[in-house]
Image (cartoon, rainbow, N blue to C red; front, side):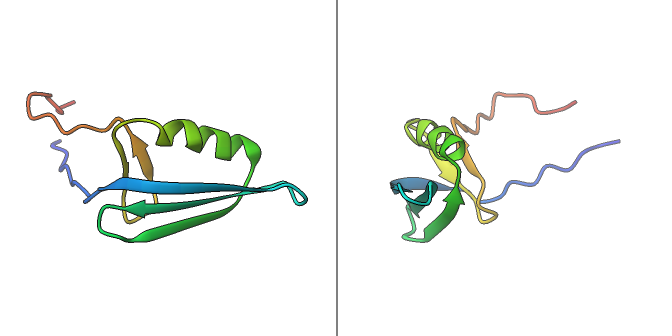
Length: 83
């Protein structure tokens, strides 16, 4: 059975802002991609916020229309993607 690979357009994250509400212990993340689209993530735990901050420090960080943040993704034509 052949698998059909579908590539979803991912945009590079240009900037991000992280905030932490000290009183309510809730994190917030705002991401701006290369097209100027803004993504807002709220009510993040400290663990989630810490993990995302680490991911966002990667030189290659992308976001897709379903709000997946992906670090280190590189499309390499020499990689065989068959299983």
